[in-house]
Length: 328
Image (cartoon, rainbow, N blue to C red; front, side, top):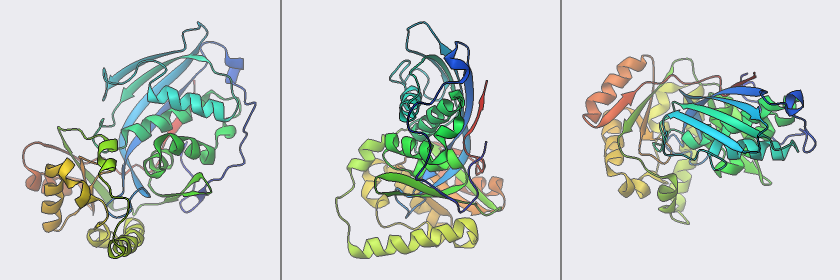
C-alpha cells in the first residue's frame, strides 16, 4: 500500500489509542509481510527535515506464536550477525511500540528479516527497521486504520528521534518532516519524474550518534539564513527544477563540522561538487548521495570516475511507493 497523495500532510491522527484487536483473535500462524525502502536524509541543507526514499529494501515477515518465548528473530543480508535476535531487535521494539500505542495485546512472534538497506552507512537502515516494525504491527491488526500513516509516523519518529528518514521510508518519494506540539508530522513531495540518485558507499561505517555529537549547540546567523534559503530551494529542485539541484544541495550547517569523522566522505563531496555534481553527505554518512536528472547509469559513471577505488557506487531508483505491507 502506498503513501498519501503528494502535498497531503501526515499527522496528527485521530486513530484509535486503545483496545485494538489482533487479526484472527491473535491465533498462532497469523502474520504480516512488509517491504520497506531505505532513504537519504538532509540532502545537504535540510538537516533533520527532508528525506528521499531509495529503492534499497528490507523484506520482512512476522508470524504470531503462542509458546511464551517472546520474540524469535532471523536475519539475513545487511547487518546479519550484528543486530539483536530477540526483544532487543529494532523491528521488534518498533512493532511492540506500535501495538502498545493502539492498545493491542503483546503477542509472542517469529520475525524473519532479509535486509537490503546498507547497515551503518547513512542510508536509513534504522529508520527502515523502525517503519517495518510499525507497518508489520498494522498488518497484524483487525482494523489496520488504527495505525494510520499519521500514527505510524509519530511512533516511528519517536523511536528514531526525528522524522526525516522515517517519513521517507513510510511514505516514499521526497518528504518534509517537522515536529509540532510534540507530534511528528510530514508532507510528501512527488519527485520530478527525471530525478535520479546515485549512492557512493564506502567500506567504513559511521554511527549516527557519533556524528551527531560533533554538532555545536548554536550556529552563526549567516549560516542559518543560508541553509534556510537552500532548504526551500531544495524542495523546488526535487519536485520541479532538477536543474537547480547543485545550488539547492549546498550546506553550511553540519557537513563541514562533521567532516573529521569521515574525511574521505568530505573529500568526495568536495570533488563531486567541483565537478558540477549535486553531492551531499547521505544522512550522517559516511555514504555520499548524488542527485541528478536523466540517466542514472551515466551519473553513476561520472561519480565512479571521481570516487575511484574504495567506493561501491550504486544507482538505486528513487522509491515512490514507500512501505508496502500485507496480511498473510
